[in-house]
Image 1 (cartoon, rainbow, N blue to C red):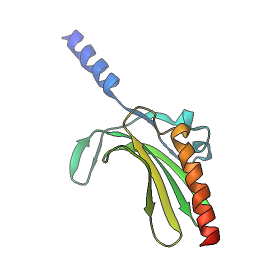
Image 2 (cartoon, rainbow, N blue to C red; image 1 turned 90 degrees about the vertical axis):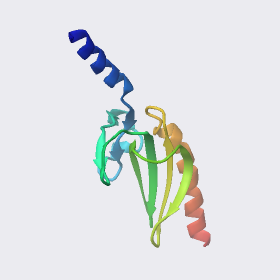
Image 3 (spheres, rainbow, N blue to C red; image 1 turned 135 degrees about the horizontal axis):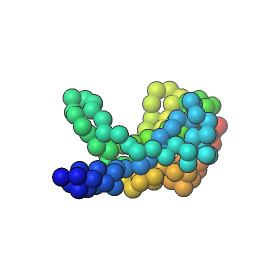
Length: 127
């Protein structure tokens, strides 16, 4: 019986998904020193659903007027996407990527966001 409990616990840990989880507005290190934010994604309940497992990791760059923020988080819905743009209200835009591998919401995936930030800035200057 103990063997079964140990096996189930080890399987649960090995099946867990790790992502970087942070917000640069509250945690400035989230921008470049995000490695310390390596966390196991918890199972969550929301929107009437219970025990929803994470499907991947997500990194979002949000541009609000002149301020940029980065949110790294676990994803519970959606599919793998790269640099998807999302416009909000006036002066707000977001670019996000979602991936299904562990720790895939790192700076390597954010390199494209820097390019997108430059393009957004140039657009705002000339628009």
